[in-house]
Image (tube, rainbow, N blue to C red):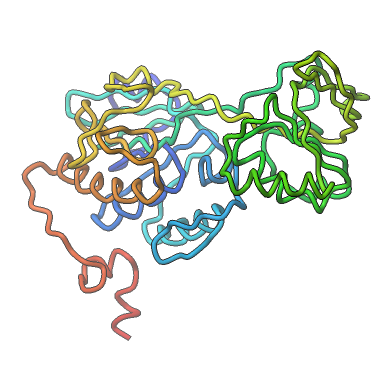
Length: 355
């Protein structure tokens, strides 16, 4: 037992790869590594699989996944989880990777906030925008209402049925939920400091039409106060640019002001960064630290497009890069899942094909 093991109570988990991030790209990375015979452990600070997709818009439709005309974020994540089952990945959810140290052997000591420790051959960072937190409402009493009548995400839309609700925000999330909930609640008011919206123009037009039809309201101004009895919200104070304050009846307030992207401990790992994104080589999506790769929204390179589709491509090339790093000089032949017996065996479909 070396000094590293002696200094810690948790046993060391040995694995080929630690993947930081369990969003769609991190999940697909498990699949691409598995095809090459590599084992992965996946760590994510969130308590559930799916990353930002599940945290912020689980029911939002996605239209640009190849061969799937439309699916929700949750459906996409569910399908990815099903797809990687043959490779039996191990998940460590609700844990943040706090330390990563490259050893003289080229392997990595990785530790999480929960004390989980890994001896990994390589590390792949698929952490999206990094550790993120919603931009919060900063008025007296707001913290006390969080999770009760003040919400930064929607986990159960039925909670708002036949209630008076206010939605704050000007982006896609705010308008998506306004359009989704307007006919399920008793009243709905959308609040934003100006009439300039960041959402898709088609959604803005739908919202304006609903306002014209008196099916919801738009109120321009800033939220300056909350009125509540304990954790029961009763009204929201909104101040207009002219200084006039309106009192809006509300039993629930949904705030969608975007996220604070924060790399967290990743920023201290010696990686080359460009505006909080990790610079990578497009041949293998390797970073400047040998053995560390980055895929998905967290990386950057000339021509980068922040699409799930692009992240899937990056995961495929990163898997080959990892294989080369772990077995330098070893020829890795490109094999196809349609015809390769090795791939069939790894996918657990060999017996089915033989039958």
